[in-house]
Structures are given as structure tokens and as C-alpha cells.
Image (tube, rainbow, N blue to C red; front, side, top):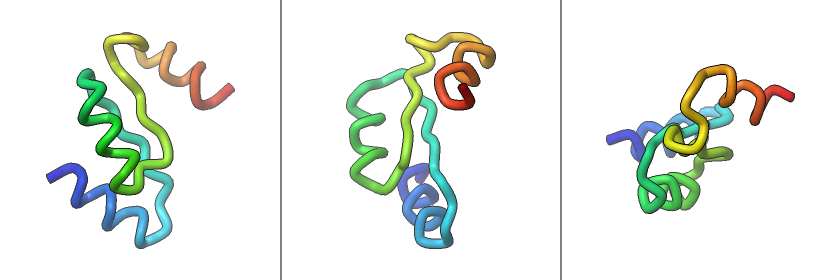
Length: 55
């Protein structure tokens, strides 16, 4: 379901960021139009995620 939403959001002009803990799903998200992916196992806190993408 999330990949369909990502595709739709990208078609509407959104920058899509997918957060998941499974590398295979993150790779698929990129194929379906996600601009960025975040593995929450590598970036456990919101601060770590913000630092990666907002710095």
C-alpha cells in the first residue's frame, strides 16, 4: 500500500521519503518513486533522521 501512495504522491509533485527497517522494502521504494529512504535501524531517533536530511 505504501508504494502505491509513494507513486501517487510523486506524480502529484511531492518529495517522497520512506522510512522502514527492511533494506529490500527501501530498495523497492526507490524503484516506485521515493526520493529518499531512511532505515530506522540505522537512524533510530528523529534527531538522527533530521540530521541526515535537513543538514
